[in-house]
Each structure stands twice: as C-alpha cells, then as structure tokens.
Length: 173
Image (tube, rainbow, N blue to C red; front, side, top):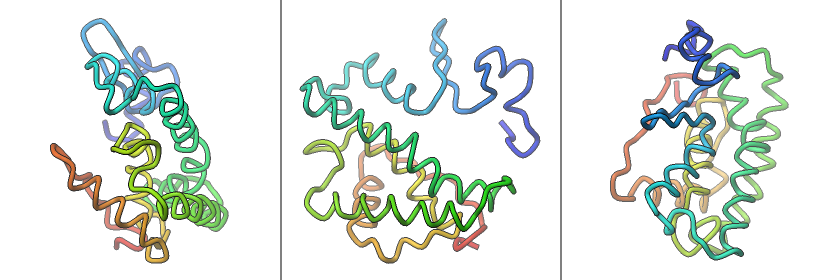
C-alpha cells in the first residue's frame, strides 16, 4: 500500500478498515485492523502464550505497554516520523519533545529489566519496537538511551526477525 499516494483510502481497503489505516490483516474470513489488535489476534490464534501470557499480572503489563504504544509512542516518535516521511501537519518540535519524554520512561524501565512486560519478549515489545527503532527517521536521537538501544538489538536478534525498510530522512538521512 503506497501511503504517500493515499492507497489506504481506496474503496477496497476502506471495506477492510473504515478508518482508512494500515495495517490490516485478512486471515480467511477474519479481518483485523490496528497493529496492536493484530498482535493480539496472532498470539491468541496461534496459541502463543509466550508472546501474550495468560498470567493476569503479566497480561495486564502487556496491555499497559500496548496502551503506551497507541498513546505516548504514537504521539511522540511515531508522530515525529510522520512529519519527515509523509510531511504530516504535526508540530515536529512537540512530537520530538514527547518522544524524549516517553523514551526516558522506557529507558528507566529497561534499566532494571530485559523486556518490557515479562521475563521474555512479548507482543508489548514488538508493539513499541517499530516506532522506537524508526525514531531517528523522525529526528529523534536515541544515543542517550543505552538500555533502549540494547533492547532494540535483543529484538533484532530474535529468531525470525525481519528488519523494516529504512527511509533516508531525519537523522537516518
């Protein structure tokens, strides 16, 4: 889907997701939109309790981080990247400020633990990874966050990891 051309607003995609957003997963007759919902769907449908644990305390921690991904991370590093990659009419300075505020909290969390929500990687880590790993494309410098950079490397070392295509903008230019 070419987002710069607005293909996410095509009639075909709007049938799958009325919000006109990606990603959208179609699994047989099931259609799931929203990246966090897709992560939950995949973990549940594949019975992957390692990625979405059944323990109520850990499941709540995963949900908390999914909310952070949809909230503070979306308004911070993700928004900053939208400015540089897509020319979004967003206050870049505010998005970068928000990015550093949430990255400071993530850094503090990762200074005492290896993964965000559990003793192993979960969908919470995956939900935050894409936005944080791409933060430099939105002019968000990650050099002040050594624990976060180590966490990114740990995710990239997981079996089956496939890297995102980088966009040559922002600090990544």
